[in-house]
Length: 322
Ligand SMILES: [Fe+2]
Image (tube, rainbow, N blue to C red):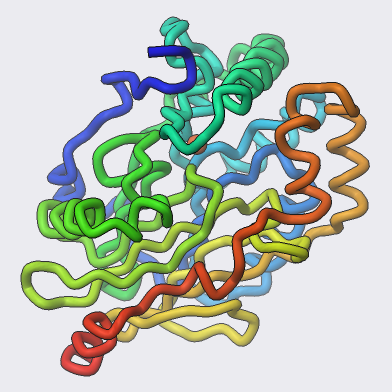
């Protein structure tokens, strides 16, 4: 297995771990995955969170680092993250990696080209060199947990970077959730974990997917895609997942489970500022520019209508359990 393709054994956990007591109870939870070192997006997230009333928490669910090879940016991102709840992604885990086969730790599936994987490994090497300048900060990042459970309005929410089995799992990728066998596997993960919502990131493509568990209850995979990069064609916005007892007026789209509102919330960051910061760190000819500039400047090909999947069965179940 080549570097960047494998999933290290240390990344794995059982869906049954989520039966543990919740680490916190809250009324409003922001799940911010895939910030990728975008300080403009960080500012927008924190400003939006500050405006939320009441009992609230914010969790960064991994890969908050990626493009932030500038030491000042690296410190800024991580000091802000560590002031809130956080779990580590493959990027933070591999900042101190001994396993050379893991590369960036992405465990990229077959549909991702080899050249993209090689560039990711190169980006990981540059970022690790920056992190090595800050040993105490790096130690805090690599010691973060791989998952958390936080209950929102009494509804259990599993927070992961990848999926219910692995820190870098692709089981909650929208591409996989289109496949019946993978969908069945995701349902089994809900059954085994007791969760009603899994909030994830890692795959960089957002999806809000309804599933029906063995008890006939509606469950949701809320994959926020990327907080720090555009998620849809022609749209310069990141996304976060907001899970709350109250609705919000600026949701891109959302669903409800047991009265809890689960929404994809746009992160309207200063795109010009972020692009300038990116180019200062990753100019034309660099690995990150080759892999990401088109997405950062134009957005991916993914469309908004592809990211909301309720399905007839889910709607029927919702009517029964609403
Ligand atoms: Fe990741």
